[in-house]
Image 1 (tube, protein in one colour):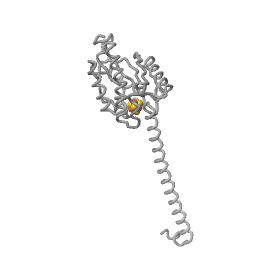
Image 2 (image 1 turned 90 degrees about the vertical axis):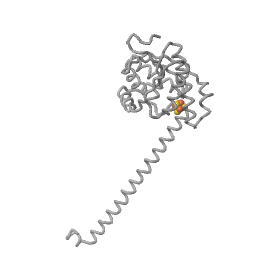
Image 3 (image 1 turned 120 degrees about the vertical axis):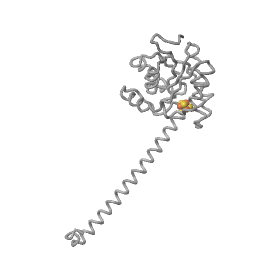
Image 4 (image 1 turned 30 degrees about the vertical axis):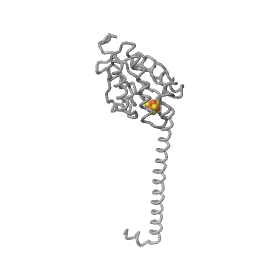
Length: 231
Ligand code: SF4
């Protein structure tokens, strides 16, 4: 593939984890002079219905709004079970293996299709393991003779969330695998328990204040002279 596309920009294959996380990277890469083609390689997303939903949302946005081509790579679920799932709740090990699996396939496609540059939308999410993801992308790109385009765009995440909301895009509540779904559910329960604790503290302090106020009224009514003097 030519270093410059018809648009005058440098073609780049952009691994995308979902539609909402693609908004800012596509915009920023274009500003930088790249023309992204999206590459969908996410056999980590479970269940399959969730995977299909995220892909549908991404394709719809890419066609109607962003005007970006989408390449769908291999959905190697067996590979994910073999290479990633054994790490289970060891998040560091699990996510490293997951990035490697997805980005290796992305780099393979980039090379096969003649791209010289690769990147990933994973860089926009503050929930990803930033350094591990960068390391995987840079190492795998180099092995394929490609240039990795890695930028810290995590400060754009709120813009991505806002943009996705304005477009009415579906936004998931967990990263993708069954382990991340369990971790997210656990975090939500912990947050709810914390909120319940705070609420019951507020309620009991209100009750104490009410009891104190009532006690004060009783005291005042029993001592009319205090009312007269205002003391
Ligand atoms: S949390 Fe996300 S990146 Fe990590 S293993 Fe699960 S799907 Fe992959």
